[in-house]
Image 1 (cartoon, one colour):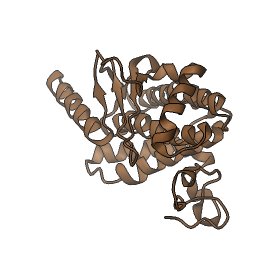
Image 2 (image 1 turned 180 degrees about the horizontal axis):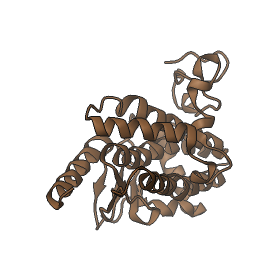
Image 3 (image 1 turned 30 degrees about the vertical axis):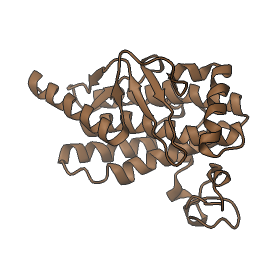
Amino acid sequence: MNHRAATDDAATLRRELAARYGLAVAERLPAGQPLLLPVHDLLDPLRCQALLDRLGPLLGSRSRAITASLLSKRLAFLATGCSLHALSVFDQALDIGLDNCWIDCRHDGQRWRSRLLLQHWRLQPAPAAGAASRQAWREATVTALFRGHLQPLWQALSLSSGLAARIFWENTAVRVFSLYENRLNAVAEPQAAARIAHDWHYLREQAPAAVFGVDHNPVRLFDRHRQGAGGRRKTCCLYYLTTQPAVYCKTCPLPGACPG
């Protein structure tokens, strides 16, 4: 690919990530916004708990555990959406290292207004040397996403809220399934469509546990197509506890749950 084509692709990717996931690039961020913070601040227990306590009333949550689960769903949507969209549609690795990311956690009481912000826009294209080289590059890219970005966050949220990280990982798997089976399913360009199919197969069937930094592949473990009982979740995301009357997810595992 020549330089101009690569530049055009990068600009298109940047527009798509902004439109679909709210991604922004801001080297300088305004001060005095308590819901805008470096993502790595969540690794600090006091700062993480302070954020959960600020968000709780906005979400209608009465505990850090509930707030942490809902926040993990949003963080997973933003991080996996941006990273995997770049990977599978554009054949690019987007730098979403914890030190390069800020999170805007705003919520208006009805819906999230949050977005991910990058301090620096950095891309690494897939190698042109062939399928084997791309496979190694892809594994490094998804490892940076799951083990490098999400696993430390889920561990920190678990410590700060008392909620099992297993719930955050199922929240993540749900977001990844939605991305590949809904959002990216409509991509028509043949090469991109083929990459999407290959990458999705890899994540579901081949990615080793080491990619995720845990002792299993959560995308495979929480594959709803392998689940009995109509593909229901194995864990509850606790969303229903923020609604009155209770509204349940379509795949809620709780006995007697009536999806909203």
